[in-house]
Amino acid sequence: MAKRVEASNVTAYYGGFKAIENINLTVEPKTVTALIGPSGCGKSTFLRSINRMHEVLPGARVEGSLTIDDQDIYDRDVDVTAVRRMIGMVFQRPNPFPTMSIFENVVAGLKLNGVRRKSILDEAAEKALRSANLWDEVKDRLGKPGAGLSGGQQQRLCIARTIAVEPQVVLMDEPCSALDPISTLAIEDLMFQLKDKFTIIIVTHNMQQAARVSDRTAFFSIEKTGDPGRLIEYDNTQKIFSNPSVKKTEDYITGRFG
Amino acid sequence: MTTTVTSHRSRPPAQPASLRARRLPWYAAPAIAVAALALSAVIVYGAGIGGPVLVVVLGAVLYLVGLFAAANAVEGRRSARNRTWSALIHSAFVLAVLPLVSVVWTLVSKGTERLDANFFQTSMNNIGARDANGGAYHAIVGTLEQVGIATLITVPLGVLCAIYIVEYGRGKFAFAIRFFVDVMTGIPSIVSGLFVLAFWVLIVSPWFNDGRPSFSGFAAALALSVLMLPTIVRSTEEMLRLVPAPLREGAYALGVPKWKTILRVVLPTALPGIVTGVMLAIARAAGETAPVLLVAGGGAAINTNPFENNQSSLSLFVYQQAGDASKYAPARAWTAALTLVALVLILTIAAKLLARRNRLSR
Image (cartoon, rainbow over all chains, first blue to last red):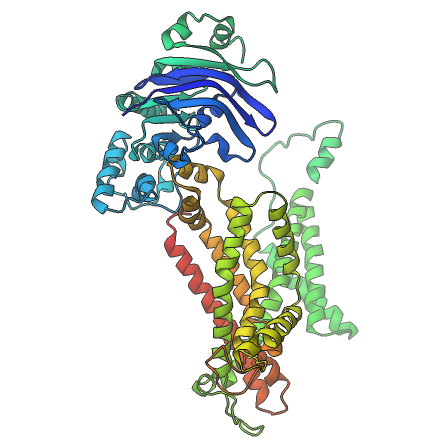
């Protein structure tokens, strides 16, 4: 199921502004990879270019190559929607669809892509909600609006929605930054479980979180405002947090900069 | 304002010794109001300069002055300003609602005279000047058909146009469309009627009518469409822009194609607002007289076919009856006006209920 993500010389632009430059990075299947770095260093831009969400913004474009198990997702004849079905994404702020119930939110990806059979939808919804550790909390009110849940529950609902379409890679863009510590813990536990099935790439500002959940860590940084973000160091999480090989990484992790 | 003044002072205001302050008793405001009205009545009638309207206006001014003075003496300057501004805002609200209440009251009081079964079952065909009967059946049919057809034309067109502008349009072309929609908003209804008269009635309709130009309810519907379209496009556009971008991204990230995201996520989220915009457009179209007069011609008989011959409408009926010499005509005009307002009101309430049933939250 899970797939290898390989980026080579990825450069992304917002109109004339170069946001990241020459990122080279390989993410192994069934691992959690954390992207850390100061604000504006291009972590989110890189994450969004992995499932071609970057180009949604007007004027944004990506150069270089990004492959998922040796398929280049930026090939001319690649279907964007197929890429996004293979590579799911969880956003910083929970964004359940306000007009849909909890159940409809979870199966939205399946339903909007043409799955109609009630039994399949029921089964997929329960499976996804169980995987997202949300089933017990919502099983009696699946027909209620998704927007009525608490922030942490909404975020887990969004995770359930993402994994219901059975992607192979799950991208998370600061999924816990709007949540309290207890909800954060629930989502971190969830990442450990999801690792068995999916490749997970997470952007986080919280270095303890990166150290707790990830196997590998990539440190991004910029020289100064207006410069493109670059990958400074990419290694095992333990190595990055105990004995980084680049001075800049150490400065960032120990809080001397950024 | 007080804070600005304070900040310019060289030293900060003294801290009050206590958080409690003296307050006017609850009956102070109504008492001042009564006193102000009484004083104003004495002045107006004593000097013999006016009637009850002047008493109320002068009373309101005296009330504001008295309230400010009393609050200033007992509660202090900030509180006095607060009370005066609150009173002014409430008066502005009353002033704004007054005409509306007056219109509704006039309609109901004068419109109920002919509000009988006969009014809704008969037309004006063969009704002479001395005949107290006659009704608006033909006009109601005309309004429903014309506005219905216009809605069927403009809602899909307008909503799709707004979707183009918000979701797909880039650069000069989308800008030009927005600009022309804005220009269309300002088209006077008589001009849209003239346009349809010149284009549809005189040029196109002869093709369907053995070479003779023909008035029709459909032509009126076209003229109303021209008026409704910009309202629907602009209101839908505003509503679509209010849908948060993260919702669209959430759907894209699930691998949902753009068109399906718009159809199943964006439109349902914006639906209540779009419905409101459509209802405003319908209300405006239902009240238009001039274009209907120009291209449907009006008529006294029932004509249920919108594609052939003259048709009337409620607003046109009101116009014609109000100008009629018969002593029974004004009552018919009032009842038709009441019917028109009730019709729009019922449609609006029904549409709001429908839109609410489809959404879960908010």
